[in-house]
Length: 470
Image (tube, rainbow, N blue to C red; front, side, top):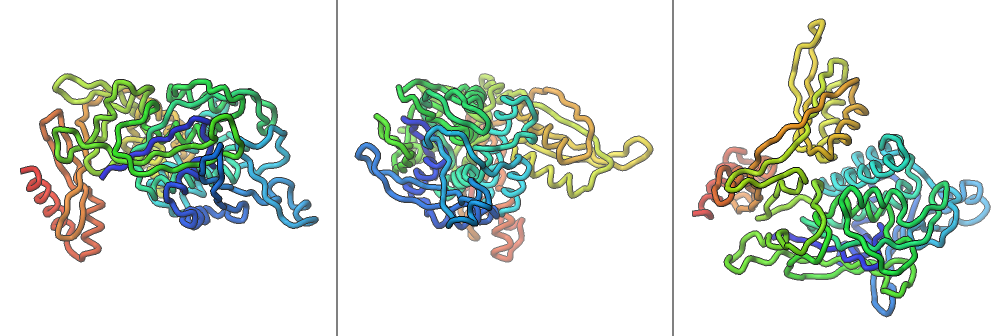
């Protein structure tokens, strides 16, 4: 059963509010602590949660308490017992004293080395890449050169990775978000006082054409961390999608406002169409009242959910025909790079949102053996993919071109076999079925577990799927 979630943000969104909503919705704090410890930064902070009241409403407040050493330096810690200081959007406006900063490659390295669940790892990398691009655009540099202060410090790493872990633990397949309040006033950043919304948040909103409004509260309501999370993972911005409501998660901010300072996470499943006994329940994605564009980086949809490629802004649906979309094709030939670096680059490109990555053996000038690396991605992802290729390989140039491709509508359905559950990928054009293939990794996993051949699991999955269709 597909699970969807909606973030209602009447007083904005910050990373610690996301964590509070996820814990309130049922994600164990102990699980988050266990997985976050894999990042190797557990000595820099303490994670705790408590129930608090905001305008008479109970919600969960999660604190990422930074050790005093990160704020005042080792000498201060030697003089007195450690204390904890929290940096978030509700902290009173004051200049920063000292904060641990990191560059994007170091953050990506920690995430990749942590062995996190696959979806949580992919989403975390995408969120940090998104905010790095925004900061880079504001400061006139490349994403890898951005020195993260507020956003890349310990607390924000915990906020972003913790949020992705929580969404994965709760089984959220598709995330939606309300319009966001703009706030007002000024805040202190790493080097200066900035107007609210801060430049990085404005750049993130621009990247997704986020609908915004004023609620009259003159505070920083949306942080770069909060904006990056929703601008990367949210499928749409607008009204609540149609859902069979299951539970609510309430994440508290630190201050009291005229409105309850609470982020509300609605969790449910798409309702079945009236003329169907089960179906996909996709009517909410066609709601004409919904606003804003969809993203190309969204939680992985499962069971009976259409993976619509029209999430790419350049996509068009031909009448009775396939979906047409514009893609970027990046190519470079490499003859002086360790093959292990090429394999590592594959993983980073796919995590960053590339649609496909492949390599071919070629013979280059002076009869040297080399590799032709090709990346297919949506146009908005081409700069990210180029940056990864330049950083991780020895190439000095990348060719790029734009092409159109025709694609089928995609669905993932689940079938039961004698050995366990297998996902089946469906390719359709309207009501016409063109292809159905069991997922390789599901078949391989069951084949190993049950000590049978991969072909046998694949055959049974396809056979059972066709039986359900007949």
